[in-house]
Length: 139
Ligand code: ZN
Image 1 (cartoon, rainbow, N blue to C red):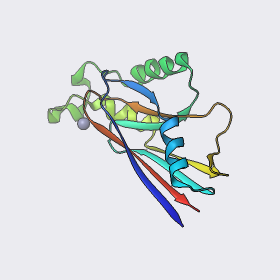
Image 2 (cartoon, rainbow, N blue to C red; image 1 turned 45 degrees about the vertical axis):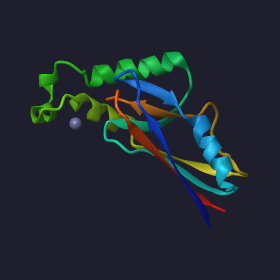
Image 3 (cartoon, rainbow, N blue to C red; image 1 turned 90 degrees about the vertical axis):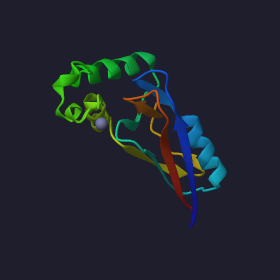
């Protein structure tokens, strides 16, 4: 069995942001030389997500608006978590809704996506350095 481990780093300008990381993952799969296997991609922080959906700008705005309606960033006093002195109670909730990781099958050396599937990094408490893990196994 072969494996490859890669880390992507992000430091977004905005507090909430979505970044299409599909090409980065495709490059890692190519580099691995693996033809049949599995590719795990996960956020390494509890206020960020990795998820799969359509690369359509309107939809990404819809995600941001929907998450803000579910877990408004303000007032900060709304969240028990913020009694610790943090201000990111909403970010933890948004991350949980959007998920920690995705797994994509590798078939014939390529990510075996369904129609329109793209991989996104979801940032919910940005403006600092964060990482995503890519782990590929197979042969
Ligand atoms: Zn926190």
